[in-house]
Length: 173
Image 1: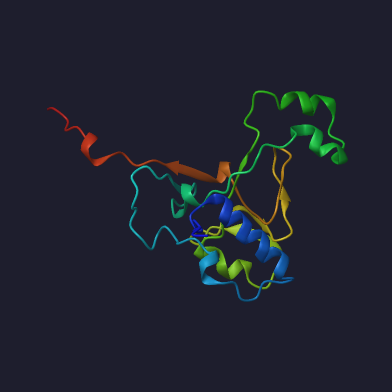
Image 2 (image 1 turned 60 degrees about the horizontal axis):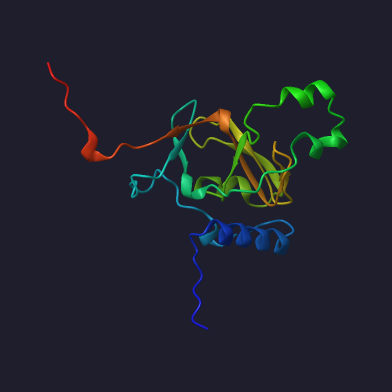
């Protein structure tokens, strides 16, 4: 039929990860194409792409193209099983609902992912905790269940945007 698969699409990446999580009871050997390229191994190609760095040591961790978006969940009502008090439900208004990025696995995560179903994601340079992963899935702070989940907390990373080269101005002395 002449159809082509766009392997850079977030929908395709999420589908591929869901199929892998169903196939493996304990992932031992994951295909190389599952992992996004480590941003420290290549030069930045797109000026519009945002780079995310460890807040503690500034090591590049992932790019905006690795973020897998999800539809917003029901918010505090999704956590009814945790018996959240009414005051806690009301205090969440006006704040950002999603407090984490759900990303595709990056090459630096490979040693942590092999042989286990869930665990912590640590910075490969300073070993500070960045988030967690679970092949079974995890619930986002917005209430949406994401499967599989490679979750990086927004408070643990810095967003680094690049400026176009042509827009630099020299300082006048």
